[in-house]
Length: 155
Length: 304
Image (cartoon, rainbow over all chains, first blue to last red; front, side, top):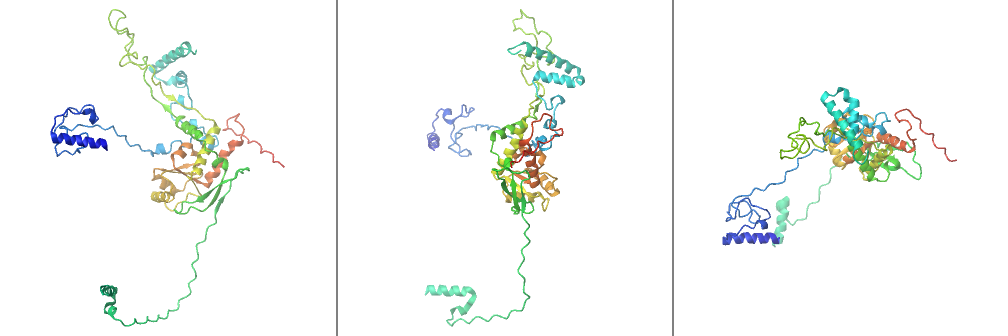
């Protein structure tokens, strides 16, 4: 309230006395006004006299932070997420939930570090890979084996 | 005099006209006409009240525990909420609220299916970079062996995400079972569990179901669970609504229970869940996988 009153008084002061005072940008709260200098406030401007943008010759563009795009929380996928995760417990153990995972064959219901994943991929899928990819996979296995088993603290 | 005039005007305005100003005593009221004889109307018979729906626990409740109770309603009318009473097993619907178990199981459900396909090329996989860019000494520039090392623009990434990664793991079976029990208990404790004898509806209009949910103050999301097949009306009604989901009792899980505000169970689903979830309290450890046929332990000898 007091700050708004002082701003109003200062703006009114300038308008009445017509002083060419240096623009107190720090007072107004932004670093540089983009070249717009103080000029007598024209009555046609829509900006109220109390706002920090009052009394400038050129309107300064104020950028707003980008708005978050609306996310639909009730799509089919989101509403039915997690259904059948307990199909083993509730269904007589005929299906294991790991058989419901969609993904590459060598990663369904299995977890490992990078070397283990590369070796498993070579075992399961290696004979039907492209030649260049198979060659790169072998190079990667060789490099990771040396890295894990010959360097560092844990060998 | 003005007051008398005002009163007289009021009497005039009551449509008695000049008779309002007369001072003669008012005429006696006319005698009522004799009524015609009508046949005696029998008193209205109220519609027959259906017998209450009572459900007791199939699995015996061992003392000192006693069964919890809940009202049984139906979906045939928005106000048909008190059709009967059902007993609920306290070891399924009355366990202590372990929020840490709910968190564990919900996190497991989110992560065990996750396969991240993020992958970047290392310096060995980026095209090119076999030749030494310039000689080792004398050119004045820094020494380099390959134009695709991680230091270079366009070079490989040293420690980036490598290939499809899986985050699969399994929680112990008893923890997952306890998670379901805690979630069901929480729903009952917070008055968000409603029992229904069957899912029959008078019409398959989504607006009827929405109106029913609003009249009964169910909240903005409802999870309807049944052990048998769903009737066509409720399938048609729920397919028109986004936040009312129908799932079979096999598909019950902690994430869906936490996502939807209200849970509607049929009595068949309650029996199914009690039987499946209580079996784990008295089973042997699996020396062989449970998918193979096994025998339950013999019942404990009764104390004489």
